[in-house]
Length: 388
Image (cartoon, rainbow, N blue to C red; front, side, top):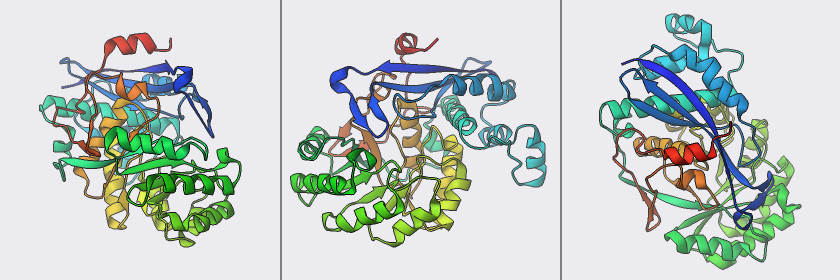
């Protein structure tokens, strides 16, 4: 089995005005991603997802070019099932032979950012092919399932203080969710307003629904500490990305100041970034994103690292169907994973890109056993929303 081609398409799906929301990234008026396609000479096809921005704020031409012009050509003619070897080839480039000989990495200068995001989509597509070639779900290749279902939490929560309780309560009703996540931080204007919204959420939901909060890295260290002090009475399940990912020591300061669990990782690339989070004792929960962290191959390494440091894992799964499905495969196989993110914002890339549905039953997601990543691409959707 050999790789014939590696291609990518930028998908851009407008969101109707009545379903748009506003966050610290601005008005989210579209959903965008890069769909990666790997085809073998024998006709097997695998898909993956890469991204380099949130919602509608990204321009993906560079990411498409990295997949097709830089990384893809390295893999043509290779066996797609050699996922670990091909990951090292992409990460180390022309010095990959040194990495194999010496047993340590010799990464290209662009060892973060767009390059690793591009690798992520390719890697997941390779795992998709491996599973399909054996008529087995990817989780079977990763060591089998640790569980056949996982609790899911409803992710959204942008409404103001007068509407956040109703908004989150509607999430609970839609899927019998027992946990919800809301956004806080700079978009509120002040720490006090974020605190007021959390208070309103807790009063509306009562004591039995877990509430997570996500600041998208927008608080200062001092602001994050103040927020933690003032929401202590509301029993938060976790505080996500309290400050910028560039300040791991600052994140460690926030964690040391509170007993609210700190979660982060959606902005991190490769196991090396997550190692630094662990060494700094900056987080309680790792949140790797399959579309940027390095794909399934690297996510398994990150999960192993988490286990060694007694850190739990809750993958970041706000994206399209391919990154969600890749996250499900890792979550099924990794004992450190304890919950799944389920987008409740307008997300056609999750619900319309593939033919399968992702139902929530009694607040839980049932792990599918379909081959590969377990999804079938809607070619009509791809044709309609591809950016030329």
